[in-house]
Amino acid sequence: MIRADLTEKLLDIKREKGWTWKYICDEIGGFSPVLIVGALLGQHKLTKPQAAKAGELFGLDKAETAMLNEVPMRGADAVIPPTDPLIYRFYELVMVNGPAWKALIEEEFGDGIMSAIDFDMVMERQPDPKGDRVKISMSGKFLPYKYYGATGNVPAYGFKEE
Image 1 (cartoon, one colour):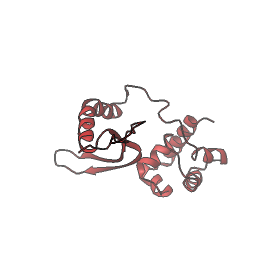
Image 2: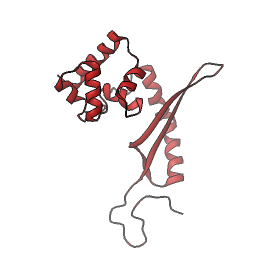
Image 3: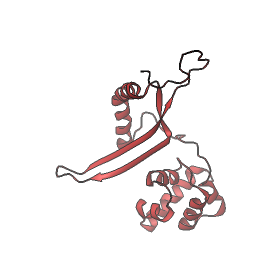
Image 4: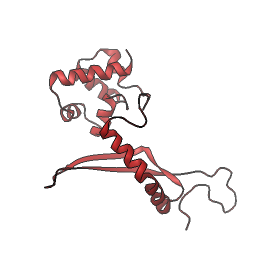
């Protein structure tokens, strides 16, 4: 079995049982719902105890359960630009706002990037009389670029210079 087949199996079981992602995440526990759902969709891994809970919940065999604990090939099947309208909006957000985000982060922190590994994300529904809103908050560790071979008073890392 390949990982994509396991994802389809999990989605089939979810549909057959009428489970919500909230129910599944509550049963597995231990991570943000974004990470648990991402793991079940093949983009993250679960810890061994979480994989065991998922295996029991979904009635998986030993090999399928073990696969949930393996590091996946993230983004392997991604189409660029995305064709799904919702995912495309995130792509569009980055394409339109990315240069401004980059400029503002570099002005505040210096030469570096925001980690997508040491990273937190929270998604919330915000009621609004004009139509409910999706609120997504992201927090990533700032990782300064290392300036190789820096000597003397030249900074070794791209922290903000005063």
